[in-house]
Length: 424
Image (cartoon, rainbow, N blue to C red; front, side, top):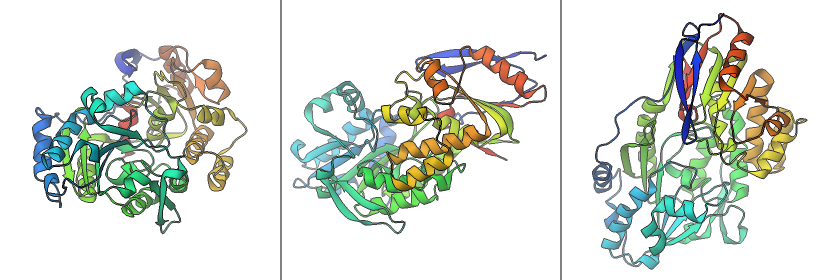
């Protein structure tokens, strides 16, 4: 019935998986643009640091008396921090800032803390051995300072070390973010080093941006920027990465201008346009395929272009399984509808980040067929949580084709967690 004449390979953890599709039904393979990466990342970074946006060079902003906090993202993010940090630390030390005045803080938001090996990999072995590195805990209320309430009602508590620092420097990357449109800028502060109550209040607005991927003017993002501006960032270094997570451009200076320019480039890289909605989306969770909590963003992005009653097939290795016990427990409760999750968000019953994801998934599963091909979570656990488990990728694809018929259209997203798809 279907001539499987197009072969594809999708990233699956550290390896790949193969599948075949009928070219007659394939609308296209949609992935980030192949913008050439930098041939000399360090030189581009140094240029950005020498000529920052709306800020003097970093060495002119600090002195030997300053207590400095450098905010970096965590092990779930692809920022090449170990490449950038040495350049920043070299500038600071040449400006007379002693090592003991510098704290490197990992901005986890609500993510789990990094292991020792993950920290070493993130910052580099030498820096790990020589500098003070602190991991932010959103539940450590004793070490948080209240700064005020945003116009949207978010109470803002921020890590005390960050508030009391003389200078705050951020290192991150600008790429698609399902809750904030695009990462980068002041997101290192909120949710990065904010209290759980602050994150919960901010993320309670995420449903307002449901099915609006890539929107940087959503209430959630506007609230992030307002909350973070209460403490501010003196200087930020953000990079934009390509689909292979290689640096294509460095930006430095004023967080607002860095973010504006970085997002403009990131949109060129990560946003794709489809001529029509499709019946089936096959989406790989790469590059956020460590666990399901992270990998579900590929489902959220694909959902925007799949017809009602259509199917989404997530291909994800998920070596760390669900990613969080609480998230797993939440997904197991089959009695919860989208409205139940919405009430839990409103009442702050549990982590809002998990309930928001529960809400989004409930809305998607209510309207569409959601299947997962993985080796990281058992069939019984996925079925219990309301997902359709696919044991054999090729067989699963053929069953979806039979389900949707000879005229069905398929879109494939090999970099699904970082591809923002829209209908033309």
